[in-house]
Length: 372
Image 1 (cartoon, rainbow, N blue to C red):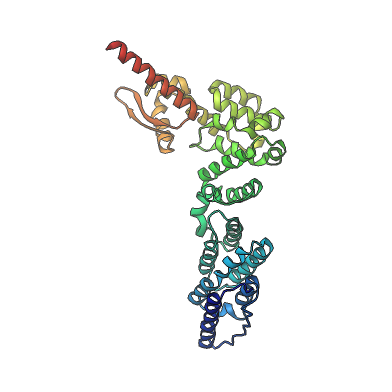
Image 2 (cartoon, helix red, strand yellow):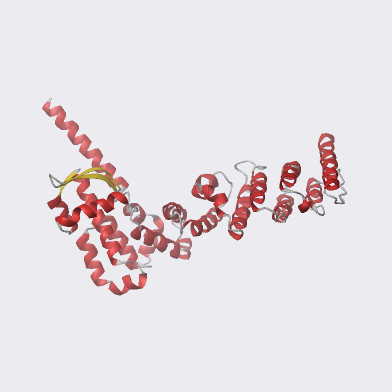
């Protein structure tokens, strides 16, 4: 039984014929012998590794790739993982050997990626190779939009948890410089994948600590209760690993300014060695204290705010303005009445905010019924 049906054989003969014309136009000699009755993997190798193929211009090479990448579907139908893995290596060599234009190479990787179904694990292999190519050739911008939604993309692939973690850690290292918030979200997703696996958690404790540190230092990150209660963080706590920073997360999740001040007094050496700045942490805990006020009342007097966060009334306008600029709150300042009117604010705990607001709604509803 032949692997390639007559219609496919005719198609490939036409591809070879067209390639011969292109070689002639480019004053090249085509040396391509094909056994059309051979296995698809062998046919693909012959077409992809033909001599001087990388001398073609970018339009010709792209059209040629469209023609020959279709053979990969025949290889996949054989359900032979070894043959497909070898064929992908040939495809990678074909793409990476075309060094005239990196943008065309990215397009070729994309073309190869789209040969396979959304759920196919070969998409994972191709994406990882594309990611390496973009890193090596300083063109990471070509896949930047994909990196920002990698969790959605990876959910479609049939890959192991370990493969997902490895990929996420690679992408975190890329995003952390320019896209800190996106990196943090992926960090959270990664450490959640550790689940209750103590060995995996301990092996990746550096990533967990980096996640906590970023949360503590970044002005727009405030959901510490969620972070503190992730299983991996609780495992570090129970095993007394990195105790100081776990204590700090607990304070930022549940405690107040005075609790942080006490912790800071007792851990000055640790804080200095960690590289975290005391002023940033103090300002962050002040914001969190402010959120506690905002949960109770959306109109806060200057006096109450100054008393809660430990600043003078003269500093309030600048302090609130910084919070607005950093996206922590949406508010306006009524200087005449000396009040801050809160519209929305970041959440110290998503669950806490929802619980409080729901309770207030229920309470107001009961009052309305009584008044009626």
